[in-house]
Amino acid sequence: MASAPVSFGVDEVVADDAWMPAPDDVLAWMADIGYEGTEMGPPGYLGPASRLREQLVELGLELVGAFLLLHLKDTLTHVRDDVAGRGGALDEAVRLGVFCRCGDGDSGIDAIIRALLETGYHGWVVVEQDQFLGHDDTPETLVAGQAADRRSLRARGL
Image 1 (cartoon, rainbow, N blue to C red):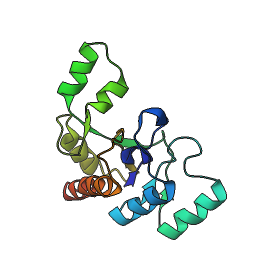
Image 2: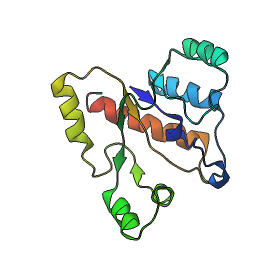
Image 3: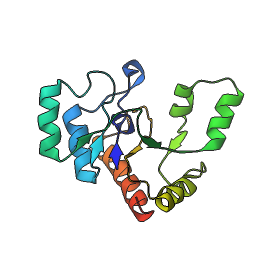
């Protein structure tokens, strides 16, 4: 199981974010939560390759290719449908919370997880929850939310 910096509010659209966590913090949080891997995030976010390699080894994380692997997101389909119905864009849907905690949405992740387990899938599963950080978000709330996701997925067999 891997996570992605976007799950901690790291994205390419920094102008709209209230703040963004430091790469060292995000990687440490991922390891503490129990993830075994990470994606790169936005270009350059995790720093130079030589330093990143050392840091990943130190934290026991592996680097996961961004678009070669299975991505898991749970969504609130009514938010998606409402925004799409008005011709809105993804950033509006993200601001409205379209990507929710794993298991809290209605996009059918339980069926996906069941299929993964039944077929014996052994590749990476990357949890992605795109989110923009607001002034009320803190490192503690980010970590708590991602830790809840990891516990939820572990309870589902991942």
